[in-house]
Length: 309
Image (cartoon, rainbow, N blue to C red; front, side):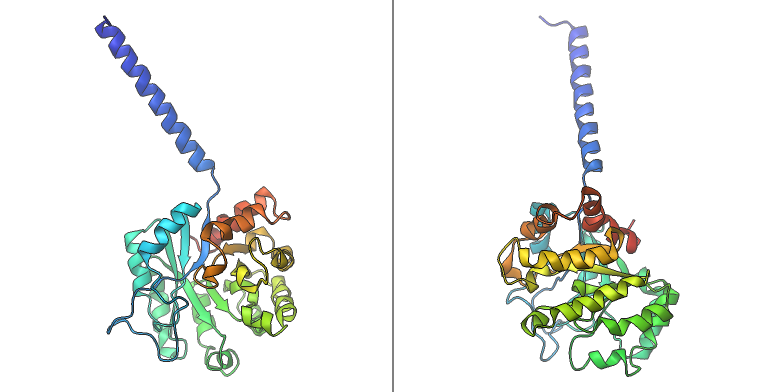
């Protein structure tokens, strides 16, 4: 029969073993590469008080909710994500803020702002006081918004964002060169080019090379960085999308690992690849990325750029 002393000794040994396993697990987790998706859209169902802007439609026929995304992130091994509120509900960030409140360690927001209204400048000094808000996302991709880059509409924004220390994501497919004078005039303004400065529409119009050239040219400005995101959308092939590897390398070589960010824009070209495939496209299929490069591109760089502690 075991003595009390042997029982206590055995219990302590088991406890020590479990503690050691816990320490090993914690160490393994700490050593694991942080994975951060630099762009996801979230939206809930349309309701009378949460309606779509006339003429704009969601990327998917069904809502892409917080409850839907979290299990997908877990399955794919994605630790964190940057929420970019979509355009169809208008310039509102309330659902993204709800996501941050529910999962404060997993989400941050690049929020929408009414750019055409100069009075919006009053919002910027306290912009980051909103839960999870780390910057602003602007889109210049249609007949209404593209002129704003040159007709004076957006002129108030750049110095105000620079003064407030707000990173700005810009979607400027095929017209990224228009950001050059802004980057030069406002050297402390962190500009982030969305989706390598391209879109699927440019692929169909055979304008992809020119758009990529504009993106590469902006790399000379140290305050400009780039999201290597949404690449399945510019591929004519199935996974692993080998025909876009050269485009990604071209942009990566110009910006380097500390100014390049992986992102999915998952709900765009949703049917082309699973979340895990969009992840493994970068971690397993791009041979030009070293392990150190992947550490930066897959999470470390965007966390640093957005000051996401």
